[in-house]
Each structure stands twice: as structure tokens, then as C-alpha cells.
Length: 415
Image (tube, rainbow, N blue to C red; front, side, top):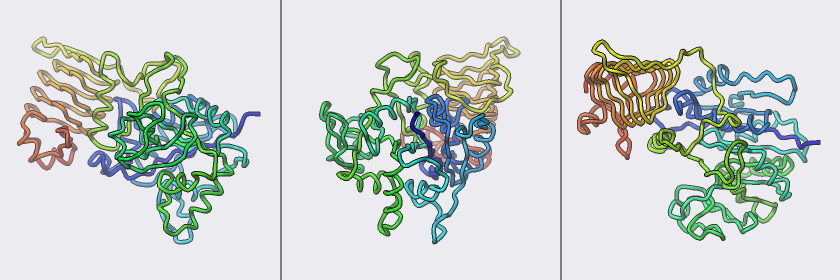
């Protein structure tokens, strides 16, 4: 009989580094790739892997996320073991705390688990963009007889200060964790690289129960898996690092490039979307054997039409979602969400436009993120005049302009 696996998806983070995009909604519900939301990647990986018992733990500004789960992920399986259930913060501690960390979020919801001690609990983050055959990771976990397996991706040594690094030997046995330390040890077979934790874990239920209970009774703990639970387990359990490069996805060549992006900052989020626009995109969304699922909307097909002067609407190197109309305007190297309108002689370059945006005639948009529903008036320029943009809009460290409805209203739409 197959081992029972229950999954928690951690979708409760505040996402403050993605402000202003998360001002009114949860980070996992932020749009990505035109028609998707960030959480769709984690949920699709789980469903494609045959893992269909999923609790989604939500907390901050969760309305937009709950609405997306309702519209896109109503999961009515015939079997009791098939479900996707959003779980708001329960405040199940003596002091009625909200979730104090990733480990505390699981601890407060242990009552939801109906899994034997020899069963498995998968804990995955909703904050990252990647494709992963999670069954492959579970097979590795069981083959190694592990108590906990941590998904790991090699990154260059100089990036050690940005990640929780895993110290592991050639067999994947974990001997230590180094949280954002420049001196983190390299991978034995690849001296210029370190193993970065992807924030995805597979536990035996017995080990998880025991360690969460002990951690809850530790007053000095931050109640976090990376900072507390996993380091405390070193030397006491069989812990393994699963090398993400070995992951095999049906319908993909072997070996396939390992793509995983932490989109925790606006610049990282922008660059990950741009990864979709090349002739050979780093992230493949077109594998029918590994679809990225999302809500289904009754949008018409995208339309490219000529304006009254005979100018054609056109797009190159871009993703154009359903319901978009390009009427005499041009789009290059960009991602357009649903029902975007590009008017006559408007130009959009290297930008991300969310659902229901309009770019007015003769407007120019360059290296920008345009929030949902923003209406860019005629003749407005964004990303062209740095001094003008600074006075009106938030701008990232890499110079990407972020335009929200609030910013447009405050600036009077001038450009």
C-alpha cells in the first residue's frame, strides 16, 4: 500500500518586499505570467505529482487569495483523500497568537492531520516560481530512509548571504544549516556552489509531531523551520538534501535545466516574468504533461487589429493573455494579463501589465509593472523620463517603475 502523504502549503506571508503589489492582497495571489497567480505553481506541482490532500494555510490580506482558490481550485474529488482546503489562521495557542513562523503555522494545525506516524507530511511554500515532480523527491526520501528531506538547489557561493545554506555530503546527508552566512560550505562535488534551501520539506509524521511539540515549548524559538526546527534536528535524525537538479518531469528532456525563482522582491519578480519572453524560455509553460493550472475564465481569444489609420496591432517576444486587444499599438518583450487594451500608436516594451489595464493612444511604457485595472491616459510616458517617474511612482533598485491606481490618481495621470 502506498505511503499516505498530506501536504501543507504555506501561503500566509505578508509579502512586504513586493509592496505596493501586495498592499491589498496576499503575495501568493499576485499575478504571474499573464493568466496565473504565484500560488498556482506550487499547487500545480502537487496535483501533477498525484498529491491531492492539500491544506493551504493563509493569514495576511487573504481575501484575494481565497477568492482565487474558490474560482480556480475547487477540488471535488470522489475520494475522501482528494481535497484542497484553505485554512485561515486558527489562533490555537494559549495566548491566541497569529502564526509566529512557518513551524508555528503547522503546529497550530496539527489537528487537521489524519496520517499515521509512518505516513509523510509535505510542507511547501506558495511563494516561488518553479516546476517540480514532487513524487521524485518523495521517492528519494523513502529510498534514503530519511526522517526529513529538504529540497535544495545549487546557487553560486557568493549568493550564500541571500539564502539558508545546507551543508551536505556527497550522499545528500545533511550535517548543518547556515542561515545567510558568507562562509557557508560549498557542495563537495562543486566547490563554487552551495546548496540553497528551497523552503520545501518532506517529513515522516512521527518526526514532525515530536519536533513541533518540542519547539512550541521553547520560549526563545522563532518557530521557523529554517532557523529552528531543522538545525535542532541535525545529528539526531536522518536528514537528506534532495538535489533539485536531479528532478525529472514527464514530457521534459533528461536532464532538464532546473528553474526555481524566489520572487520575494519586485526586481526578482520582474526578472522572473521576463524569463518567460525569450525564444527558448527558461521556464516552460507549454508541456501538456505538466500543465500549470489556474482559474478558468470565459475570456475571448486575444485580438490583433488595425486602427483607423491602418496601423496593425502587433506583439513580439511577449505573452498575451485572453481577452487582450492590440489596436494599432505595439508590444515587445512584455507580459500582458487578461483583457488588456493597447490603443493606437501606444508602445509597451519590457513591461508587465496586469489584468484589465488600458494603455492610451500614443503612450509609451518601458520597464514597468502596471497594476491591475490601471488606465494609462493618452500620451503618457512611463519609464522614459527618470526624474518625472521618481516624482510620481515607486521605482525599484534596478529602475523598474511600478504604477498602481493610487499612484495614477495621486499624480493626476500626468506623464
